[in-house]
Image (cartoon, rainbow, N blue to C red; front, side):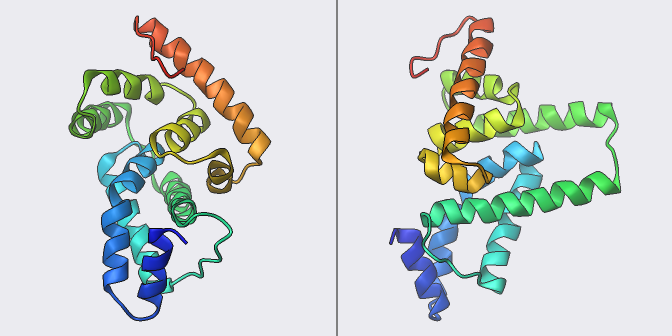
Length: 185
């Protein structure tokens, strides 16, 4: 049982400090992951908060079939998908507003990404297809193994292996357009 699972168990047993530990340990990574869906850091923060509210109020059962982090990110992904389905029905944003939001998002994200290499890498990731961006984020930036990424993305392990390979090739191509080669590819 990893730290998140033991903290969650303590929370379910009545120790409110358990949920505080979970939020402290997972909020930043979960926010960045959800930003890949929302494409707006403010919305991603709201989705992160909604994920933790769902965890605290509904108290879903953690069965231990995966790591706690994998399970938590899967809940976050479901929250993001619900948001995207709902927001798509409500309105479409004008292109000017999207460009303005993208500029605001970029400046906020730079505070998360401290080095120039990471900024270049993130920009290249941003140009990838959503599935490529998601699998690379989970596997390389969050350290998920293929089985955990498969659980979060609702895919088979083999599909994740293929997706990682294609995503890395696509990322390499994007980085080369910038004149940059990332060593780990």
